[in-house]
Length: 223
Image 1 (cartoon, one colour):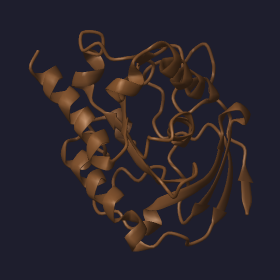
Image 2 (cartoon, one colour):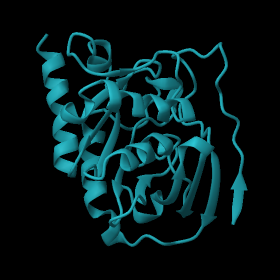
Image 3 (cartoon, one colour):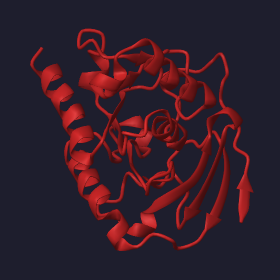
């Protein structure tokens, strides 16, 4: 078992060009094969959909060629969840080895415990917060969609503060604030004002979460 302490980038100089894919939480990671192909069939199918829509992936034309976007699903009746591994955006066909199982997420401690053959996405803290906030959430997609992100206000989408970086304790707190102060639970979509093109959709099922972000995309294109 290895314990990684990753510096949290909460500096005043944060900008929307912040490097993608940097893990900012304390990660207690055990490298071990725990996921079977059958565990990741559904999540991989929907990841392919997001990849084909350009909302997830890796390309030299975007974000300095760092992988972007991630996807997760609740595992069992508790708050454990399967999530795509960090910097796996360039993989066309994911296998079980490309996902991690998050066994514990404690936003107030900036702490995540995970097991798998790859480390969890740098956005695992945000996913974990969502699963803890509402037990009806079983699937989360963090997409990158310029059209939705740029028109978040006109689409009346809840937004996290522009001063808050992704993958941090502060972002987890912002997500909780949205649930207290906005209709985000009903909409199932919000944008990250301080994370370029960042859009998060969630739902009781994979099709519901994906349908919500795709519907927002269509609305944005029609404007």
